[in-house]
Image (spheres, rainbow, N blue to C red):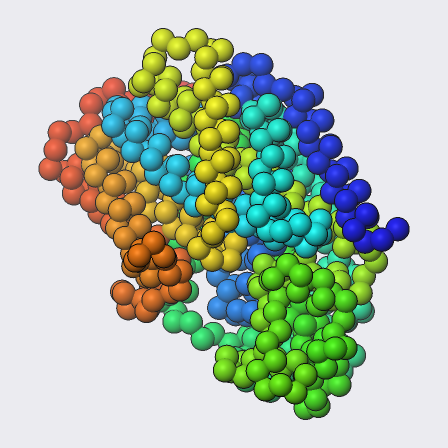
Amino acid sequence: MDQFTLNLLVVGATFALYIGIAIWARAGSTAEFYAAGRGVHPVMNGMATGADWMSAASFISMAGIIAFGGFNTSAYLMGWTGGYVLLAMLLAPYLRKFGKFTVPEFIGDRFYSQTARTVAVVCLIIASVTYVIGQMTGVGVAFSRFLEVSNETGLFIGAAIVFMYAVVGGMKGITYTQVAQYVVLIVAYTIPAIFISLELTGNPIPGLGLFSQTQSGQPLLTELNGLLVDLGFSNYTEQTDTTLNMFLFTLSLMIGTAGLPHVIVRFFTVPSVADARVSAGWALVFIALLYLTAPAVGAMARLNLINTVYPQGVAEAPLAYEARPDWVKNWEQTGLLKFDDKNGDGLIQYVADDAANEFTVNRDIITLANPEIANLPGWVIALVAAGGLAAALSTAAGLLMAISSAVSHDLIKSQINPSISEKGELLSARIAMAVAIAVATWLGLNPPGFAAQTVALAFGLAASSIFPALMMGIFSKRINNTGAVAGMLSGLIVTLIYIFLHKGWFFVAGTASFSDADPLLLSVKSTSFGAVGALINFVVAFVVSGMTKETPQEIQDLVESIRVPKGAGAAVDH
């Protein structure tokens, strides 16, 4: 059986599974559409949360970012995993105890303001749409290679699949679909990693293989460092970014993770607060399986890439273009891998100097191309294709669910038409999701960077707008409605302006540039500014709240009831 047919069968089987689950778990009420009827088992919810959280950025793009960025990009690992711990400990249980369907609903009730709720909806939509662009980018990359269609066609196919199971199933269908998608993506990620680790180091555990000896007799990282330095690249394990930018980037990813609405709403689907805590722990276990493997995947992919171009060693002549392996030919067809024979010698020059480099590799293809680079069996290649699509589609569905809920529940039901029937609200939620899918697909045709970079921008937006409002809403009685609104708007607007200026998004004569400009504030890049925006949000909220009316007593009591466990204070000394 040829590779294309095998890819089609495996990917098609997984799609049929997702759609079948969505039909089986079709949402029949708003409670099922928004929160899966609050009846999801904690272990299953942990697995669904893992799939929801580990997006195309984690599966497709993160290993590629690490492969080409080395030590500097370790911030992705630290920020995303650290942020999940923040979410599990500081936000999820309290928000579940509050008992609402959506994040804007919590903000609106806690800050006793429809304006605050509306601002929260705007913040949620901006962050979620930016995030979903990264998922659609990943979908296009996977489809363009493995189903041999254009990037644009791949996006449309992916959008159609998400539409079929997300619009029909709602949160209930999405939850059980994400359980299946987690199984697919984790198997697809770890099996190739085990194969490649065994091939390069003889160690079946990729995380340990990263420090094991290769056939050269050197530890893998030592060999990779030597090869990169010889080719003019920076040392793989050396920090070249500024400490300030790395710190702010890590912090931005952490608090951005804790403020992502599509992950937070997962904890609304379990029966109790205790179940929310348990499911958070299980989710961390499921997430760790991939995140402990990703650094090894990135380093091994970079080593295999260099060995492909320089089969006799970097001191010898590189590979002739005519002798390039099949995997290079396959990915050339997608336009994501290119060879430009600048000196006309017919050899593939892969060096750090941009003026001399002839081999350009899109970072988003590394994980997907890894099995082909390592000459693994065809079924492994097909499995990775299915895994990459599962990661992208699962997160896209969660994000679209968050957008749909915000529009139908927090805008239409809460403000525009409070008397709308449950059937009408359910219909408006599905229409909102369909529109969100169409917008996300259109934006995904021209993404502002690699999948992981685009997602990092979304985390910065969530960090600067939503996270501070949630933290202050839970842990501070003093923050009032005026302060919360001023803080969210300040954080969001300042962060958006900085991103647009730093990314060079100046629209002139109908065109736009997407290249990074020099940092405007010390060494802080656009992907790191979310932490600064969050600080601005906190400061403005506290200052404005201090200058305006005190929070009503009933709201202070509400905050107290969220934080204090039921029955606290019953046992006292007499």
